[in-house]
Length: 506
Image 1 (cartoon, rainbow, N blue to C red):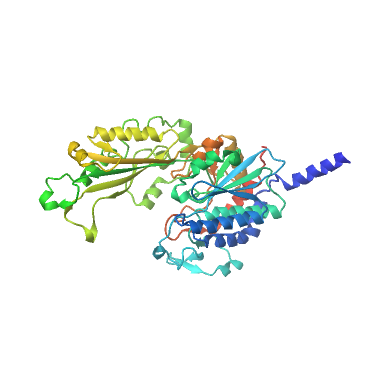
Image 2 (image 1 turned 30 degrees about the horizontal axis):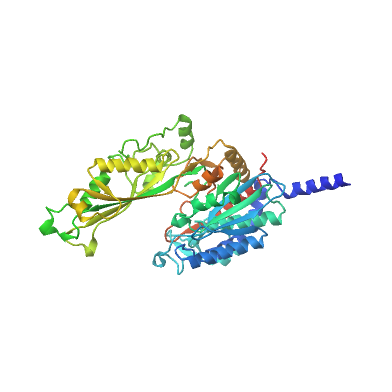
């Protein structure tokens, strides 16, 4: 009798866990539940989520806790010294594999005056009219109509509340269909990602036992510009530098001192120009050291269906920096980007002066081969070779008189790059899921150009990580009129369904 009971139990478990529904079934489930998912999306984006305002984030945290509680997940806030992160878990007692999903719930700030709707946090449904302009339509039309090109406009629809709502929807589907994953699931929610996740690296080390998993899946970012199913196997890290040059202690009349007092804006321009050649390559010796693309890696990069001419047309540029032969090759190297400059006044406020200071903000996108401390060291040496004396605070009167050229240098490493091999178990497993969902091989990107705070997890937990982007590439994330395409929302649910139903013991 005991043996019979055990066999029955194992049969029931086999029916409840680890089933692999095929494309038609996944699509059918998605069609059945996606409007439930859309209701979740419109509910979550109605909550303002600028991490500068902790009271806004608290509202979002409480909403997420309620969602997990209603689905019988365990959850806890992990203190960070800033805004906490939220860890939720659904443990399968029969599993020996755990997968950790990452989402962020905070969003970029909004300038309401730049949005083509009354409130960026009140979602609206839009379609393009004959002139190519987006016009608002009633959500009620979805009761009888569906157009994959219609879009929901609101802050964080794509970055990153949309993917989280997709995940909750997919979980609801599998719970009701009694087809839960055959592995344990953990979800980490980051509420400071748009602020650079300043507290996350230390928190991951502190809570690495709680976060322990076998694989990390990042649900963030857009698909390839072709909008085909995509897997991204890495992301560049990011570091920042601020350079300030100094002229006279106070701005001076340009007629009286224009040929006498050195202009800090010119000094800064000359210094920055010395760091790159005419082809846009960093000219600092050793900057690209250690990065050699093999023929096999070049084949992987060439397989991504980019159209470089179309990219240039979209950007409105007649030439490209010659760091790589193609767009994909270019992002395999560390960058050195001037993201902003400032000196005195311009426009109607312009004044005939020699400025007192000039400032440049520089960001450096990192790849796994580039140690940011080493890059900082190379940049410092280059600056000194240009005849500059480097200081860490505003120079004293004595330093001003002693050194002809002074630059204040401030630097910060946010997080490192990460990259998972395409031919890893994680790659095989995810390709199997995506093939089952869409009947075709996904586009596979070796490393993305942007940065996400994942390397702390990879380093502390010693696990591979892969990004599963789902949203449309033209979603205006970080900008006014952020949106998500309905076709992407539905296919995002289908994607997550395939991942949650992929057997972990393959």
